[in-house]
Image 1 (cartoon, rainbow, N blue to C red):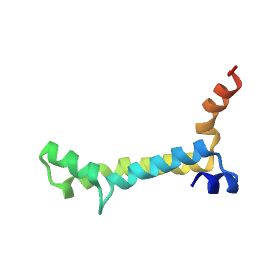
Image 2: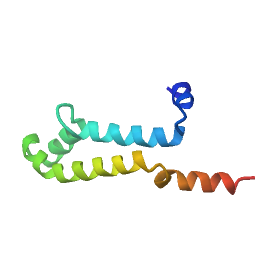
Image 3: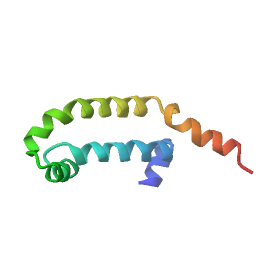
Length: 87
């Protein structure tokens, strides 16, 4: 993916952060929801009951992903600052 991302002009750090955040949402939401299933098993509650509790957090997480995806300076300011302070 790195050559394609570079060819399209995207910052690889930004792409990596957005990709990881999307993978986290995918691992919590159904039908796969492995993280939610494990947490339900540990807590001793039904998987269906947890979806109501998780939905506000999932909506907020998706909002943060959209914000980060469309405003890359939110996540790239620190790497750029570190690059300027380098040797």
